[in-house]
Image (cartoon, rainbow over all chains, first blue to last red; front, side, top):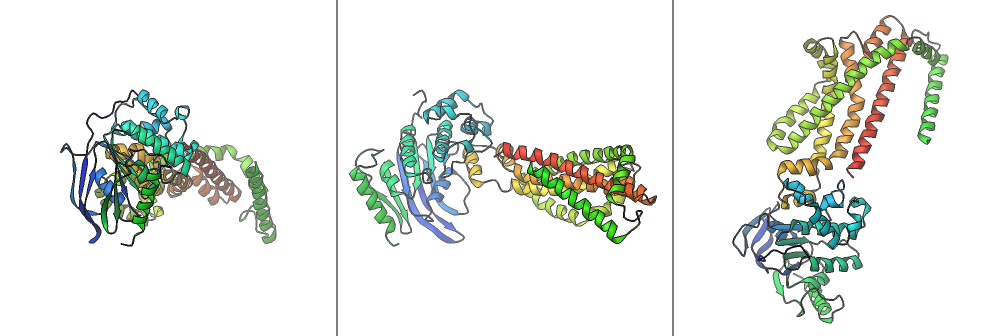
Length: 246
Length: 245
């Protein structure tokens, strides 16, 4: 592939606690996001997973955050992250090419259409480059979102449940595509799906009301086959953890 | 073309009710002329009506363009700046509490009896609906799009231009549809207060000379003009909204 990977992968350390209107959302916790690895933050809804991601992304939250977020090279993270959410966030008035080059348009930079076409080809949508999002299926739309994320070419990728709205088959395909295309980058994946965490992660951290617990991932490297016995066993163990009363 | 058929049916029904009322009440034609008499007045005086309709249409179109532009600019300013919002909103709401009718004599005093006092009336009457519905749309950009744009390093001005304004097009469209209906009201009020041309002037003139059939013909012409204007605006808005969704 012609697309260069970032030369030095970036690790991130998140430590701190979060309060909302004086009530604790999560007590001080420490999360290591390994350089060039997939780190999965797994947990039920409402424990603050997405808040952790938003804080790292530098996005507004209604929270009071007491702690710090540091990159392994000591530089600020601003401008070095790309973000992909559960909803594809495609702009309906732009075609696929326009959406993939959105970042450049928003920065007033050159749109690099050739590179965008290559990204669209990598997610398998070359035939659809001039279609509007409304003409695409849910899985195709999420592929466009992935191409847009790749186009940003940032060392850190923040994924906020990006596959959870897809049907099982499309979800498995998207996981494989994302693992292939984002390899070598530092990825934080926030999810409530134990299967996704067991399949994709180099590191797993489970966030529940009781706090953050690091969990050993299966011994094989990701991405793991959907029917790998060790992965399935880990998926079961993770689900059991999620169901434990706080 | 079911729309056309039901439109023709509705018109026929309206005309029959009108004629029925004329027959039932037995009112003289200088109080309530029947549809045929009004049609005859329309045929006899169509050049006169057209001459005045062109004047009113001109006032309406200029007022509509100016009012919609000013309203849209205001909405963007308010959406960009919290301090502008804090200052301007009470003023805007207060300005709506003053009936536009009450301002017409002052506007005529300031802008004279010609075109511009009517344009000013039309602008005043449509400015608020356009500004407020567009501002409403600009304040409701889906938060995910804003998050995405921020992680991409976009400036607030770029986010406004490339995300918030396109996303608010349907709200702007509903403001513009209202404006198309309100603008002729503004122009005609202006003409009533002081004018020597326009459909509003013609209505007063015909009324004063007891030419009630001509007055009806002018009123119906104004209504038709407004309907046409609304239909054109509706097409434009549909096009814009489809383009953006």
